[in-house]
Amino acid sequence: MAEKEATSKKAPARKTLMQLQSETTVRDPAAHAKNQITELDKTAKRSLDKRSKCTLQIEQDTKELAQIEEQIQRIKHRYDPLVQHLADLREKRAMVLQTLNSCVAEEKKIMGDTLGTVHVRRKEDSKLRKTMASQKLEQTRGFGMGPDSTFHQGGNKNNTMRKTGLNSLNNTGKSDTR
Image (cartoon, rainbow, N blue to C red):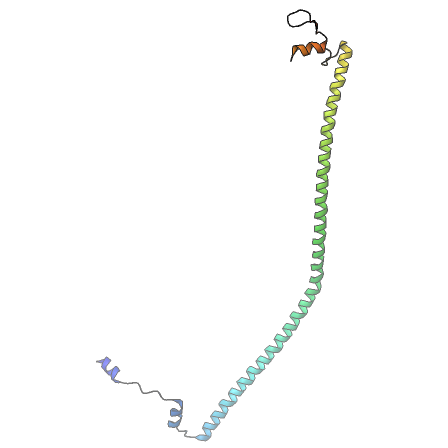
């Protein structure tokens, strides 16, 4: 039943502002005008306060921007030489690296040449020591150890005999009549 009563009551139709103003009458027009002027004054005062606050904020922000610009100029005054110095250091670093690389390449070349020279000298020294030792042994023994000092057996026997001067004997022990 409560539902039926709630549904039976219809909400009044909505009225526009013009309708509401035309239906209401002002009892005291002077008081009404005074209230309107008071409200207008309050609105104007709020607008002026808001405007002065905005103006003050703009002035403060302008001062802060000027300070920030001044700080930027001071920092830039110190920063620019540092950037230039850094660029100079990087350029010097590149030159030093290039010099280092050329020195390393030159060192590798010198070490390679030295290694080759040492190898050749060791080989020649070894040969010299062998030659000197052979000469000393020849002096001590009275005969040499070279291929010309002994009868060389090997290879073609006929060639060996011819080289040694024994070509009068052949393989059978008979003398060669050539």
